[in-house]
Amino acid sequence: MFREHGRGEAVDRDRGGGPDHLRPHPGAGRRPEGSAEGCRDCRRGGAAYTAALHAAWLGRAVGCLLGKPVEKLPLRGIRAIARATGNWPVTTWFTARGLPAGIAREYPWNRRSAGTSLAENIDGMPEDDDLDHPLLTLLLLQRHGRDFGTADVARLWLDELPAGRTFTAERVAYRNLLSGVEPPLTAVLHNPFREWIGAAVRADMHGWTHPGDPGAAAAQAHRDAVLTHTGSGVHSAMFVAAVIAAAGAGAGGGHEVHRALAAGLTVVPPGSRLARAVRFGIGQARAETCFDTVVDRLHTAYGHYHWVHSVPNAALLAAALTHADGDFTGSICRAVSGGWDTDSNGATAGSVAGLLSRRPDALPERWTAPLKNRLATTVTGFDGTGFDTLARLTHREACRP
Image (cartoon, rainbow, N blue to C red; front, top):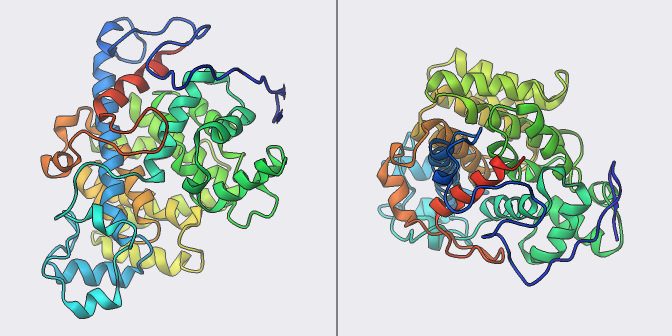
């Protein structure tokens, strides 16, 4: 059906009898069976790296969940809500308890998320595209390995991703696929969202499975991203994948986050809008002790962009990670409190900072306990899966030759 972008004809593989993500796939090469502890000679760090991945999955979920109720709110609304409930600077979950009625009317919670993402009602990790897409990428790697092509991503989406769970650039590309448009034209045709943040949302798995190899992670993220995005949208995915790959190889700690951000900048054109925005965010964070001032300057510089565009969100993500100096709570809270795409920025910041923490018990319990080691999703075979299991499955793909 699809002509592979850069690889000739795509192979139309038989999907077989349903989800197969808990078993090794034929022809995949040597893979560790069961838990990662059985992979003592693995170049990806064995049990220690599985623990780091567990923390990264948890971090991604926590950061996403923190940002969900205030997604789409203007910066002034986020600040008003947090101040009115005694949570400014943001240090914990948002709550409706004690929120004055006037502020609640002026700045209503995200209606789709408020029932599952406030301190008083969190009960496991609710479904979100920021978690669905790493799951889909995990399926992609299990089925096709590291040599997947853009057409493989497209086929996987048509097989496994409900159209109603796509948004903006992904929804347009999905519609283009259904209309017979082939990648990479799917990213261009009638797609005004092609430089938004969606491809960056899909980048974590590419970084997690390439610890210490930012270039390979970025190349893999590029093949994924061009299905739906162009320009800064693709650059943002490559940047995020490279940052996470670099973070996966470090020993943890604050200094590692700065090294990881620098590695991320090596894979995008230095004169691109994305690279300039990232450098601006890092520079502002280094120059100011007050993060509110950093955020105000970012909004002044990039407020003319749509709140889901990749450029302002990359600047904010880089600023939050830099200013927090590797601290988990500081990273996710700065990313979310800075506005724009709050759940996506919180998710990526949590992924990076969680990975740098190196183990799940290094993350504060007030963040991880409400998740109850349970993820809701419509991605086939994963609903109710624990983050510890996801870490082991991700480690398998990191070990794949």
